[in-house]
Length: 338
Image 1 (cartoon, one colour):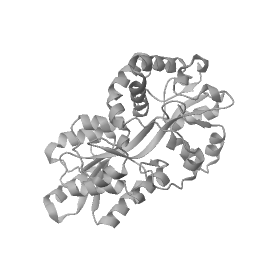
Image 2 (tube, one colour):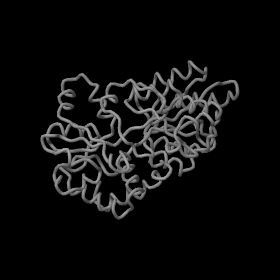
Image 3 (tube, one colour):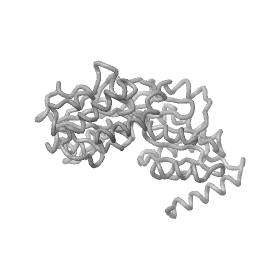
Image 4 (cartoon, helix red, strand yellow):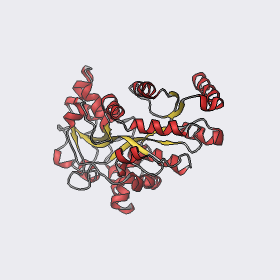
């Protein structure tokens, strides 16, 4: 059911479409819900004079909306988090190829596909409580399936894209049989049934409810930057590990976007995508939501990211592992990770 705000924005899109070339706009359908993105969008309009119309919603809802709107969709750009979600949109025929020398030059090849690209990254890290777990027990994703961690692992649902993307990368690196064995080992080590988000897993580890958890790096960085007494206390109990530093590196996921196939303002959509790869926009991602820029030359002055330090990231191309998400779900289902 549409909210009043959503309906009003949709009406504004309709007016924009009828105005044609007179309007300098770009219409975003976005599943990012970070307050810091407001400044990001405002700066784009300030730099280009192009007004941003925006509809926010959940990924699945926005995707279905674009499908249902068909050729008359006002959407120019679809923005979401997680490569698995971008891949679902691409397979649904939502995106069109984007040709831009600026994007090719600035976004690394392993973080883009012909139809969508990443503009920020986050790592899937292991976090443990040193009172319960030895550091050498949790140096790789494989370690999470070791029986010595029985009753120690907290993790969110196996159907969540953050875990499915990790599973898709593991499938690409190690094959289906080994990944399913790993998933079964993970399930055998649960301290509790999967529930909550990544922050809930961090707090459970800090409280001693479990000894180890998986979490996206930006959730850890949020706690690190918080001055709330409870967050400071929780963070003091946690140790962060970059998994797989002796093999293929820590799994890295993305926030990304693509130009919608039926975009009525394609030129402006491409300008917006190029803006997301600009130095100023890349700094917003690092400072505002504790994500890493995809443009390596951009200087990051985020105290939490600096404290987390450098690490070896898995540079397996998203184009290779993201399509394995559906298989990862089947593997996790068979393993009982729900």
